[in-house]
Image (cartoon, rainbow, N blue to C red; front, top):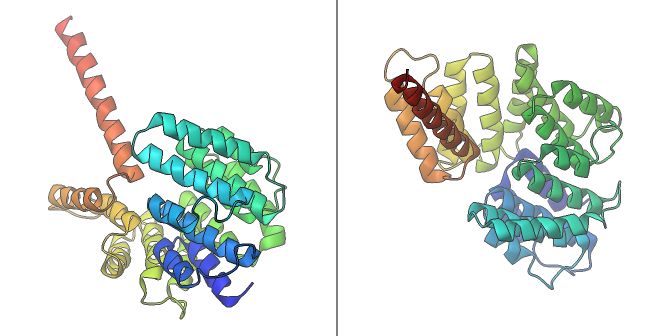
Length: 319
């Protein structure tokens, strides 16, 4: 792997999607048949999708330019996310069907197959089908050798509160990929979920990444600074968490996950001004990322509360 390709992959793994996309654009010339060139474009397009910039993803991989199964999967994922964001269920189902068709061409332990599985796994997880996503990723037997599939699978397992299975997949992968950046990030993710000493270890992982001379002081460190903050929130170190989030938002004022973590931090460890700080944090998040998962979840909770309130009021009026 060339140095540029290594940096592109590392930025993608760290969640520094804008920096990854910019580096790909700087290295966007090459023969379409070159696997290294193709892989760069795929990471760039996937970074754009992760940033909800589906038009940039499709611009990097226009139909007819690269027609490998993995490129088809990334284009289909971009179309799926765009349709989902537009609340177009017909187009999202069409894109999901296309992804399912491409899945038949995914070869295990092959980079192209891994990309295809991650794309379909991402779409199914976003479509509230975690079980289907885990099946597509090849999770369940702790014998996968595809590190990106394992990372996404563990993320999904933690989202459905299956720490036991996530730990099993991590332990199996660590045997053969102990030096992988993704293994370190998986460990940090699990550590934050567990809390306690494990969260402290997660902090060290993110701190080391944030101080990497190749990235330190640049917007590409914002995801790592946010990770540090989350680890501190879990450990009830609210002042340190705020310091890391402040650094993150100074480098990138619109980084959605940093703004999202300002929401709970607005009320934690404070005696006064909690409501004002909370409303300000929510307003900043709504402005920067109106489709953020936290806002969608909050909207759903508000809907459920309103339904429960109406039912309770009707029950009281009929008593």
